[in-house]
Length: 227
Length: 251
Ligand SMILES: Nc1ncnc2c1ncn2[C@@H]1O[C@H](COP(=O)(O)OP(=O)(O)O)[C@@H](O)[C@H]1O
Ligand SMILES: [Mg+2]
Image 1 (spheres, rainbow over the protein chains, first blue to last red):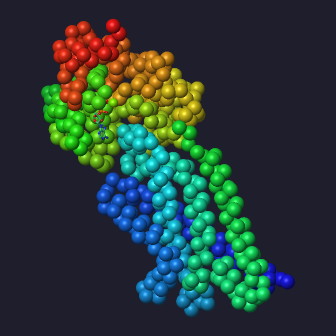
Image 2 (spheres, rainbow over the protein chains, first blue to last red):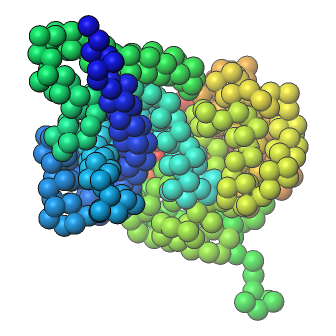
Image 3 (cartoon, chains in turn yellow, cyan):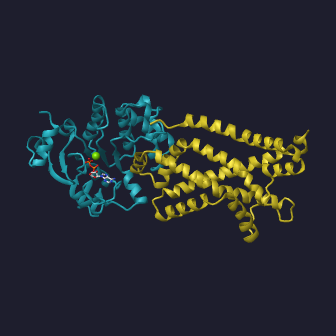
């Protein structure tokens, strides 16, 4: 029995890893910006941040991913790849980046909310001391508050990252050839190995997520701010 | 401005009112602090001392009245306000050292980020200031590794690194164990002798007698007495001040 040589399991998981990686980096940046908006002294910024987070966080992810493909590409013609539309790889590549965009938009809200709870662990005196020294709002946030907030929420952020890794399977809805797409294909052609196939894919995800959780858990302990 | 213009006071508050919701916390405050003067503010808990202190660099915005620092009216939130705060040093009851930065980084941070000072220069300045407050050998530790008295001296050094025109102290020794109070008061007394303009909320009578030019007594959001330390401690004129002194002075 050679499911592993018949199918490109590693290749499919490599796509999963790439989806996760780019989405995680983007979500971290977008989530930080959203958190900055939600604690901003400008009411309009706070309003936009609050509405965005509450709408996007409560929308099913499948809807968001479908929305990027059907709404952004098919209807509005948004193209996120450098490949020409005559290239065979045009659609796979464009859908990959559309999926990343969807994951960033969605996961960013969870990063934002984690960070906001982290900001609440930073005593107000820290920001007051910074303002009293003449630091501007963005400096106070960027140099004093957020670095301490991040250290406080590394463990919850690890959970967000693990959820994101598993959520990337939703990209199969728009045909990004990651692990879940491969699984469907394997089941279709080798249905007698159903449980083995489930096992292989599940194991793949555990291999990806378990070390992440352990590693970030250790980092969280190491960088915790002593008060 | 003409050459004959008198120099403005370092701090001027005129008709200042401040509310927290329905609570009237500062009531028609008028006070001028000339350059180089050391003013001790005292009064019962909840009388508005901290709030008074915090309105001067607009950590608390006021509802009515005027506040000027060195002749300039307090700006609204924004760049100009940040610039003004850079010139007004503040020391808090809870020290508020940046917990994720080392001691020397705490002192170097604002000169670099606000004044644009280069790193080597900021480090040298920070070393000098830490030396001056007696913490030079702890420069690479984190705040949580220092005693309260040491942390408060670092906080003073951090404020001094901005070369402020005036220093505000809000009960700088109230959170300290008794044996650490003097090491902080000594630094403040030296600063006062060197001519720094200071507004100090404190109940330390020793410091008030030794270092203050003037004592302001607050009760219920009002300035009730404004006199010299000698006058205030020996012959307070109001009943509220007499009552207050009766409670805090040893019998
Ligand atoms: N942020 C705040 N919100 C609401 N009330 C406050 C706030 N800060 C202080 N107060 C109230 O204002 C009054 C004066 O407080 P404060 O200036 O801290 O007095 P003091 O420093 O003399 O003890 C108190 O009644 C206090 O409860
Ligand atoms: Mg107080």
